[in-house]
Length: 443
Image: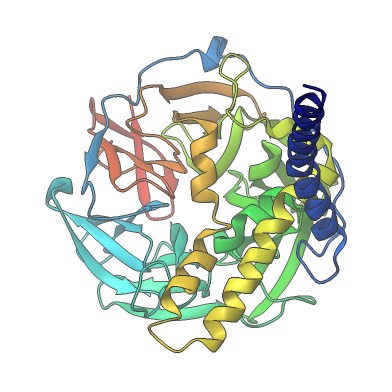
């Protein structure tokens, strides 16, 4: 009996020791990875605080204004990030365009029933090979019948949609004040032809989680087409995203996606050259466009309300830099190993490690942790939220942009959805304002 009791005690100790090792060993490995040199993020991480979550009340009260959206081309396209309408100056006909994963620029025809590929920003065999495919993000009209494209891998491009001719205005491989742009994201053009654009991070789009967990390294850049020069206006933006010039072009507003705010940079006046918080928003702002009444429309790609908490407590991560470091470095190390393997393996054996390296730090899987909710907010030029469009049902989640075309239709873009959404026009049109070469408003 004594020997059996001792045996049971020894077995219990062994089991407890193994359980303890199961808990302690991973922690030790994570701590070791966290201090190893040569693994991104390379910058020193610091803690920061997000604005307090908004309540879904007042102008942000939950509604179903986006629930009537029609989802077009379901399963045929992936990630229509932005929408633009371009008017043919010769024929006076307006066409709607979008850009998708795989690098294609699409023209929407036949009232949204069909689409045509008018250009590709790159060339590749697999659409996930974004570095070669290209990835068009922000789109704008230049007022001359052309489309300005912020491509995450190629730079700032100009497309003649009639001929399909692409011209590179800013090449991503060329350094700008010390470093090449790693993630061109959005573009805007002033009345004098000067182009303002955002470079989101020091990490490429397929490593977006590094920017999410890392430090603020985004930039606002001004490109002068007359001289070909680029000048950095703002640095240390936490994933610089959408951009919108003010009506008088005396300041520009930039969306800081991971800080849940819009930042204003003064171009003119007594505050010229300075920056300030323009508005806090209920989640992660993406693209910025003008509303029918001339205010800012912001797509909230990951909404955040106090009543609807995220599945992932990201506030704990933002408040603790060491947690972000431990959380992201194992994935970064895995990606480095995969890229090394892909470099030494011949085709087609290198396809799988390349595919994995493009997806392991992508932000798209992370979006599942923040729930499914569609949200667009309208912000006036005083920085106040005055209206919001919601869809809690999940049929139009992860919205990067809302764009009103000349016929009054509301187009809803997303970096992840496998469709382009459209709310048909309602009511007559009244001409009140101009955006590029499209003038419109809704009653």
